[in-house]
Structures are given as C-alpha cells and as structure tokens.
Length: 339
Image (cartoon, rainbow, N blue to C red):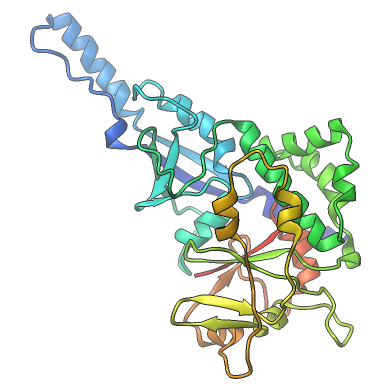
C-alpha cells in the first residue's frame, strides 16, 4: 500500500458531517410557571427556561461511516431534561418528513437526502429528534446496541461472502478480535478498527465486488460484478455503469448479471432483528439490460443525475477493486449514491 493510498483511507475514515439535532415540538416539556407562584419561584423558573432554550438543540460532528444508534445516546442524554418521554426503542430521527433508517450508514443517508453539487463540508444537516409516535410501518426498531451490532455483523458477513465466496475469515475471529472490530467502529478508532478489518480485504483476490446503488431513499440495488473484465483488466466504475439499465420513468436500475445473490439468506438466518420486510425491500437483485435500453452511464454523461461515493465523485476510470479497498464503509459494502 502506498502512502497516498493510506492517506486516502484515513481521510475517508475521518470524514464527518455537522448535524444540528432539534427536539420535536411535540416532545417538548412545558416550563411555563403557574400564575400563583411567588416571585422567587418565577425567577427560578425563568432561569430554567433560559437553560431549557439551550437544550432544544444539539450540534455534533458525526462520522460519515458510523450509524445513528451509535451516537444517539449523546443526543438522548442532552434532551433528557427537555422531555418527559425518554426511551431507546421509541427514539427516531426525521429529516424534512422522512424517517431516517438507522441501519444505513450516516454518510450514505446524507448523500442521498441532503448533498448537492454545491454542498460544502460546513453545511449543517438539520435533523428532528422524536421520542414518541414511532413510525413502525416505515422503520425497524433499534432497542439497544446489540440490535445494531447484530445487524452490522450480518451485513459484514454478506459483503465478505460476496467478495470471498465464504465467511471463514469472520468466523475465525477470536472473541477479542470481534470486540476490537466493534469497539473500533463504535468509538471511531481508526487503528483499532482497521487492525481487524484489514483481514477482510483480499486485494486482487476478490471473487466479486460488494456494492450497493442507492437513489431517492429507495431499495438499494446490487448484484454480482466481477473485479476483472473479459479483457483481463480491472473493472472500472465506467464499465459497471455501462452495464446498468436506467429507467427514467420510475428511476429504477438494472444490471446485466442475472445471478441470484443467496448471501442475503446465508447471512441473515441468525439475525435477531425482525428484518423480514426490510430485507425484501433493501436489496434488489438486478436484471439484464437490453441493447435498446438507456444505460446509467449515458444518463450520468447527460448530467441529469450525478453519482457520489463517500461524498465525492471518483473518476469513471477508477478501479472497483481500489474503490472497494479504500472507499467501502465499515460493513465492507461500496455505496454508490445517485442524486
């Protein structure tokens, strides 16, 4: 690995998003004092209200590669004096009326819902925090840290099954190594996380590249893509996009690989979270594109949509192997966001 590659990997890991969390007005506790209170008590209550005013929002710089359940503990504690309803299982986040799915990496959600070509690193993402009226028809519940840890482990298994054909490296981790990997992600500790995660990267030994294409908060699209093309060269982004048919009528995409990805079932059998509905919606196997269909590459070249990976737009001639090594999220998937 070159020093440049190592710098790229560290820069990707250190990417953060400024977020302003605002407590939903429906969750605010009233601090208006009754008229019969004495002057002293009224003054005390006014001081409480001034303090309370600062408790309605919480600004944080959040890692792009993390998940909301790993940082919402701080948010919950901050708002604990501003609402009477505090429950991990009821906490949910919303942006402009859209409930945010906790199992999607934070950076992917930002690129999907917020980022534009003019977005700067200082742009604040305004998110509303709710402790009531959980939208259970739209979101899965995440009652504790074990839930997100289990989900992460299963997606990591799926990604490794795709790129290596098995999950032996994961299964062979010791308890200490497994804890080290999770603690590195949870604590955003680069050295701790990558000391274990580097074991899952086969270099030129990829069987397939684990990737997901995301657009408009819809079901991610994925399929099996070989890292080496028919000419013996590394598959590029341009090659991938040229094989994906893009349907402008419903913004759906498809790929010319018809292989069924059975790793979903393989990796989710032991999932303790009820993700049956979510699994059906969140991973769509791509079908073949016809010679008459418009490809994603053509649409991208027209300028009507753009793509981003980890918040940036790598060149179309970028190798999928290289991108997989340095731009994948901690779950080992390469997320390509269309906007």
